[in-house]
Image: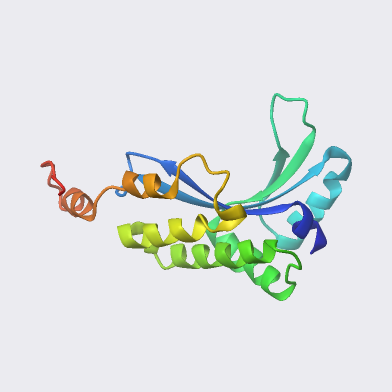
Amino acid sequence: MGLIDGEGCFHIAFQVRKDLPLGISIIPEFHVSQNSASRRALERLKTLFDCGYIKPNHNHSEDKTWVFIVRDRIDLLTKVIPILEVFQLQTEKKNDFVLFAEVVRKMNQGLHRTRNGAVEIMSLAYRMNGGGSRRKIPLQRLIELLKSSETVRKIRNGRKDTVRTA
């Protein structure tokens, strides 16, 4: 799995979305990039994992790299993670993979649908890829963006009154 050790990435994205009960979408993503001359390597990965898709890495730019992407949680859980647990990574990226697999499994258990579970997932994700040093939003601010459990409970019960938090 040297290609993944060198050119792969395990990433958990967070997207603020007011239409969701907690106000944040959690998106796990595995991707591997290569220059256009080596696109065949990405096609082999797609065949190996039997999932995902390949697209230009950066549309409308001079960058001619391509990227193999898997975002589907079930594919990550049933195809990507099991293969990478058998054919283990050999670099520090292995640590990111272990945290990534833990996040995907927690999401499969539905923990991303609770405030406490989302905070736990966020904390794990911010330990990945250099400790979150390249993230735009600090972890504490992301946690603050989560809607409170009381707000979520009232929304689920169909009540629209405003909740004041201490």
